[in-house]
Image (cartoon, rainbow, N blue to C red):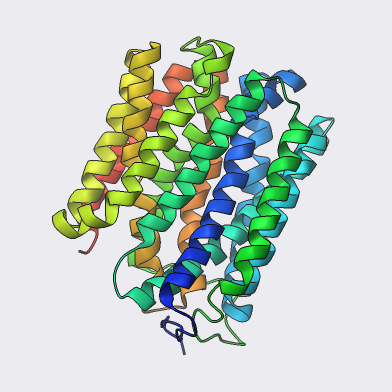
Length: 386
């Protein structure tokens, strides 16, 4: 018998839980964006071609996808509070390992572990967010993801500063790791103690039903675009836009800023215009932004294009995760894991594919292909229930 997700009893004021869970989104986003901002540095230091970089980046989705079913079961079995603490802690500790990698095999091993930690943090933190939504009785998921995006913007800005001042990877990553661990220590006591009733015999993995599969496909398309922007925006600005070294991170910062802003208004926009129209507009903005950056790869036009992409991807994942967490057929943690198995395959398989396509053709061609994913989101949006 499936246990449905229900709100946890409010042992503290609900805004306390909201602030604590929002903090974990911030810490998680800071970890990922710190790595993403320095990918061009790693590529240069190890002398990797675009194709080789694409192959190396496959290590992250390998760790993430293979651990998805287990993470969903762990969250359902032991609760998202414990798993959120462990996931964010391991995520932070993974950063110094990436900086210490002195060879491609060492980097591959560190990236696999980074992917596992990323998945553990992602599923458990989003399950916490579903529980907080239950306490409020309205959609606030997009705002949580907005905090994650703000952290991404901060991480990219810090990364740009570190690059401009020639700061090595290790001191940069150690600084962020320490800050994240300190923030986690402060937030931990105020996380939701119980997000939903848990089953001792919950299955490790459940195949998504038709409605969850559709949500997973939407997440796949949007996250493929989002993952491309995280891992390749800096490379695109360096190689295609030919921006000065100090301005290589501008494209990523532009993308992150509009994605963050979009997520803070996404809940209001969805309530006013409906989920279907929101998703359709999101897909069209993704496609338009990428095609603008590809067709007119100047500094200003590419920056505007990346800003449009940020607006486009801002609402898709929060809408998908919020709907999955309210599944009536399985617990929130297992439902999120099932959808993430499909969605995050796009987030982390997309960037390596970009490298392979770019090696065979060019970065502009590979970015144009990603624009198709935005059109798919717009087309499938009609099938999503309001």
